[in-house]
Structure formats: structure tokens, C-alpha cells
Amino acid sequence: MERHRVPPEHVDHCARHTSRRRRRPTAELVDRLPHLSLPEAVQRLVDEGTPFVLAVDAQDRARLGDAFAEATPGGAAGDDRARPAAYAALQLLLAKSVGTPYQHASEGVDGLIHDVFPSADQLDQPNTSAGATEPFSFHADKSCSAARTHSPDWVTLACVRNVEGGATHVASLRRITGSLAPGDVARLAEPDFRFGSDPTNIGPILTEGPTGRLQVRLSTDVTPLNPEADEAYRALLRAAAAVADDVVLQPGEILFLPNKACVHGRSRFTPHGDPGHRRFLQRVYIRR
Image (cartoon, helix red, strand yellow):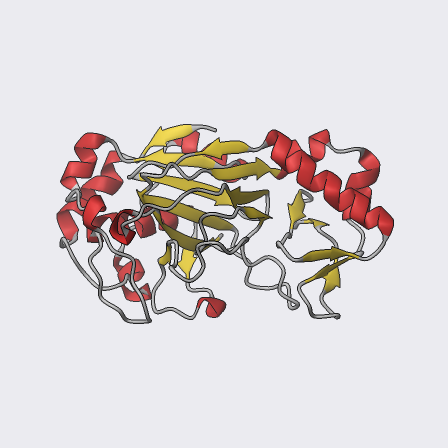
């Protein structure tokens, strides 16, 4: 997976205009942020719908007020916990360079940045971003509602801390379909899958987007409705595992995921005994 340096002008703006601590970033903050262009090589990846990583180098981390180790996930809506404010602003500034950061209604939190952190009561639960010791299977965020609306075009995962080395698995749809049999691709495009427990939420996993490119909608609670669909679904998961990149994010690295053109998951890991040192990512949803 391609890695690029966070553009210096993005870091410069956040270092000069952001205090060390502040409350959760809001839409008002996003409105005040400028529109800064991404380097041509990075913009090409955005236009292609290719996952990539942007990294803040050591010198720029120091300029941002290197508080990564002290950052603490927020709790309830409106909670004001310690966090590297300049890094939060940088996430939104980079998101704004890709599209429009937005608050997904189902998140139930106050703010545009969502903390992804092992929760004490969910550590051993599979398929949750609050888990740790069980894996989170391949999925595309918010892609499987019955209304089929409001799914983000891009998702960013910014690393604040990852001393355990938990890996994010990223598989592009282009590579997945390239390794599937044509019959499986065709079957995955049929409305033979139920998403969740709603008996009316039935549809295909693969659809054709506005530009003619295939798009994916995938949750961890898919139920194939016939043996042929089940076979294609299992082939999809095997193909995703075979072609996936394992991305172990380090503090200051931000993973950009084209949410309709890839699937992602997480490996199991043993969380640090001290909650203040556990793996801590921050997520932003983006529309284009």
C-alpha cells in the first residue's frame, strides 16, 4: 500500500491555528478550515478509489504538539477529554481535501471524529471496533442500511496509539474481483443476501456505481439466501483475505479507505493492561 507524507502546508496550518487542547471538533470548525490541495500523486489515488496512508513525520509531529501518548478517548457526547487537538484538526483538514467530513446519524456522538478504542465490556466480542481479542471481519462502514443511503464514500482511520501492533486488513474490490471466478462475481451482484436481521433488507453485495465501477456493500451479519449465494459469499471472504494488505498503523499515520471500493477488518490483538496505553484510532466519514 502506498504511503505518502502529509503535505507540509496542512501541518503548518494546524500547527499555527490550533490550540493544544479543545473539545470535539464540530462542523463549525470544518467550515473555518481552508481548502488545501493534495499532492498530485495522492490525488490520483483518491480519484482512482485506491486505499493509501498519509504519515506525519517526526519533525511535523513535534510541531503539532506531540501529545499522542497522553491522548484519552472521549466518552459520552460532549465529553471533553485530553486529546491532541492539532492532530484532530489535521484529520479534518485532510478529510476536507478529499470531500466533506460529516456526522453519521447512527453514531450517536457529538462530533465529527469517532474514537475507536477497546472497551472494557467488549474486549472479547467479535466484529466490533470496541473489541480486541477477537477479530473484526471484513466490512464496509455503514454500507448496509435498509435505506441504502448515507454510506460514506471515504473513511479515514488515524492512529493515536498502537503499542500492541494491531493490524488493519485492507482489500481493494478491484483485487478481490480479479481473483474471483466470473460466476461468483455475477452471483454477488444478485439480490440474494440479507443484511442484518431485517427480513426486508435484502439486496446484492456488488452493485454498479454512477461511473460504472463496481461498488461493495458488506457487513459482518450477511446471510446468503441460497446455496449458490453462500458459495459466492465464502469465495468473496477467502479472496479478500488472500489479497488484503495488513496495515499496522503508527502514531501520526492516517489510513484512507475508499469505502465503496474496498473492505477492511482488524486482526485480534492482546490489549495493553493499562487502558491509557491501549490501541487508539480516530475515524472520520467523508462524502465526495
